[in-house]
Length: 189
Ligand SMILES: Cc1cc2nc3c(=O)[nH]c(=O)nc-3n(C[C@H](O)[C@H](O)[C@H](O)COP(=O)(O)O)c2cc1C
Image (cartoon, rainbow, N blue to C red; front, side, top):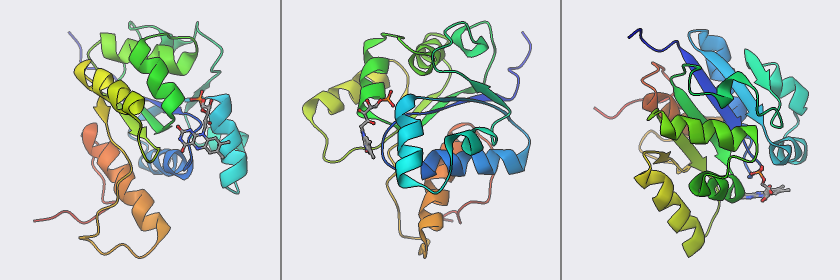
């Protein structure tokens, strides 16, 4: 068995804080050690337009490969396409629900379903507050299926001074999940 190629599937769905997905793509673009496969939902394109000064097409240029969310024949739709896993950042409650239900109705949720069935790391940076019982149960379902719920929750032990410091912290926590080395925050020692 050969080791998995250093390819990471990055999904962005339509929750607030698309800056989190953009920050991850920027960091991976600079690192150049991981091939990124990006899929944006229509919701993500809308929140990028409404909440950032970026254009969704410009965000897409940060990825090595961009997949259309309607293209269920894309490489990341198949378990035979080897990857390190997938992160959905940010992850809306709609995408979380679809992943928990295993509906696979678009490429993002199909790729997440594939990641779970192949027992690869699936990290969901879920953003909503407060959380309903439905949200919590969907998070439990994904967790029991092997996924990781990683909400963007800031710590203050390293004295963040800017929004970018907070984005860097969550991005570093995501990279830690894939054992990708970084210096985005100072570790507690
Ligand atoms: C500006 C804006 C902010 C939103 N923020 C959130 C959010 O923080 N969390 C969430 O679950 N949905 C949020 N939504 C709603 C989702 O975009 C909506 O449920 C959408 O259907 C998600 O679809 P997707 O998961 O396919 O992107 C937001 C919508 C807009 C327009």
